[in-house]
Image (cartoon, rainbow, N blue to C red; front, side, top):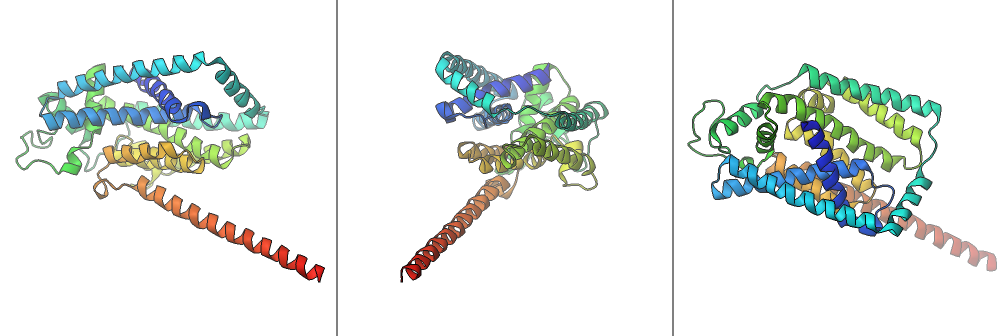
Length: 343
């Protein structure tokens, strides 16, 4: 049930957000992956809002959960209204369907085999995460923190190691991180243990989100080549599979620590940021930056997604300038050649 909730609700919310951001300008390169990933960031943002509200007002975890669910219901209703209203615009829907139909290409048998191998590899990885609970928890207290929230009905009030109340408090940048609160909400909502949610459910969703984000990169790199996209995704699956040899590598983060904020940033947010920038979907990039600030304690808020965005912007400016200078030199060369011929 929790998997169905964590898949359908983000897709619905993300679809509504995309309609608000892009409206009639939505094209065939806005995919289901964009809806799912955008909706996931919206859910994290809603959890952050409820989390901060509870901390600022000194409210209990139960109040935080009720605030989160109330916000989720409101967003759900708004999303349904936006989607239904969009469906009523038949002309727009017909135009979108025509665009998507014209953009689809018949997948050949070799490509089908390629996608089947990728799907099998991804499914096996997913099953291993769900069934084996391969967890690297050295120095991590996520599950213990979730348990302390559930046991005390308070957010970040008790040290999960000692069971005693914090005497000096917590650093503000650490205190605003919302993942333990979100995980605790899932535990209470679906009557599951912290170990089940933190070690099994969330890593499985992180793996799925990673493949969706890398798919957006593949679509940006190879917009017209289905086979190259399949090869790219197969290489991603292989790299994630064999990349478990060292802590900090993408494969290790996904397979053994998918519940950590740094893992979600590395496996989901960063590739999705690259994919958005390559496709020039700038309106969604701030969502990635803000989501990272809500889940990772890094550089006091100025995260890696922001640095990547700035770097890509600077690289694009330099590339455009060099391209313009090259075109200008070519035009000047043509003009000079024309003058010499006239002489």
